[in-house]
Picture (cartoon, rainbow, N blue to C red):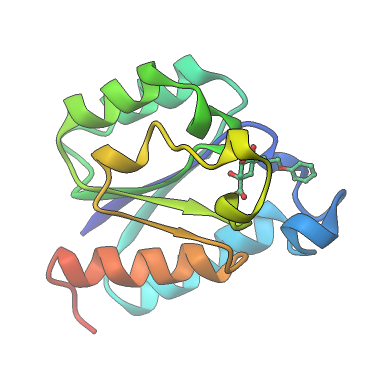
Length: 146
Ligand code: CA2
């Protein structure tokens, strides 16, 4: 089963700054751990990080017909992007929203997600493990092998 993993803006900086908020693992570490989990559970990943809203949207579109589901950390676009939300709605395959930090325990502007209503669910506040748990949930939802 094919699963798209999208990392939004600034997540390429993970592990280099603000470790008290986002942890010490790098994006490369997270991707390696996800690839290992996917391989052990019969899933194939396509992983992309972009700082550009349009690239994230194009990637969602291009994965139509390939992806059975997806996982997205929309970064700051979580709180602002009608366009990203519309894209997730339009492509039709199930998505899970992930955040490293607990957005509900942070500044009020982070408490609202434009994205959550068009996702299967949202995981936040658990650091990198949230991605792995989202992957487990998606594989389970799609009828995986574990
Ligand atoms: O907690 C999350 O995963 C967020 O999606 C991260 C976004 C933030 O805007 C959301 O409200 C919550 C920010 C990503 C910035 O990542 C950095 C990583 C290292 C150093 C600085 C920023």
